[in-house]
Image 1 (cartoon, rainbow, N blue to C red):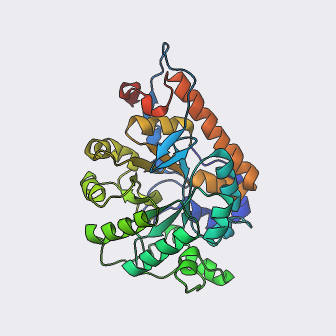
Image 2 (cartoon, helix red, strand yellow):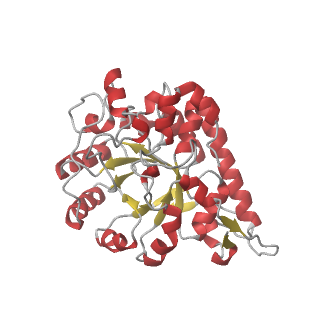
Image 3 (tube, helix red, strand yellow):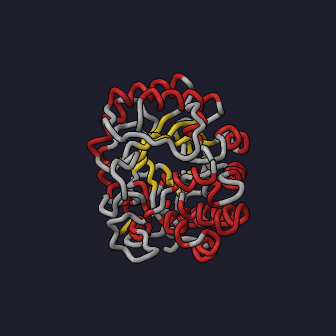
Length: 353
């Protein structure tokens, strides 16, 4: 399924920035505009129920100690003010009205405190790059700025070699040219324009992650880890006390060869330790996609590119229209499937082509 408002967004952004938003990796063999994460959902079919004792659906979802109106979060993207004059704020206002939590990139220009003032259900997403001290400082500052939680991206958190940027577009350089700093540099005190240049190595281990997770908990912030594709990584995450694991290939931005998060969901769900919620990030375009991910073991889904595309094309009104459409379809599909909530569906109601 194509992105909503794609033609309007391309006209508003221009080809280079639109291609960056699409996130095509340099090794991609996909046709222009094709998204393998979204295409993966097309292989799934849902089986409705004619008879059910379930009442009208209630989509409200508890996740990481927070209550959301539906099992849907809005994902993070960099350089928000490049895409809209108000940056992420129109999205934050819509998310607050709809009762959906929002994830905010550390590469966002709009200050964190401004976003949390518009929507208290805002999580800060950090790159697991640079020193542990940097992460600790930003986590502490995020708590003071009213963040609801932390998402730490462990998968491919930086570009260790030149020429690996999606679409060949350097969002950091674009922000520098405009003189804009980002949350990461705002909260670490440097306030330098652009995106903090961070080394990729050494890799994180359970000890480092455990210390950051403990710090976040001490500040009242749940911490989820993004970029989980290998079932073997789930047990160490649970041992570290994280609040959730996000199955994601980071939008296939670094490489088109990463496994698809949707395809990995069954194995991840089978290996998931008790008490560790599993989320899906990537390819969600429709309420039926949320249903399918739920049947494969996801407690919630994260939608990013459709929201960003709507923001670039039509601002707050377009974002609200798209998200309302997603939620309306999710409600209808849940009812047609004969359940009171997507989590109550029978796994036998899912088929693969």
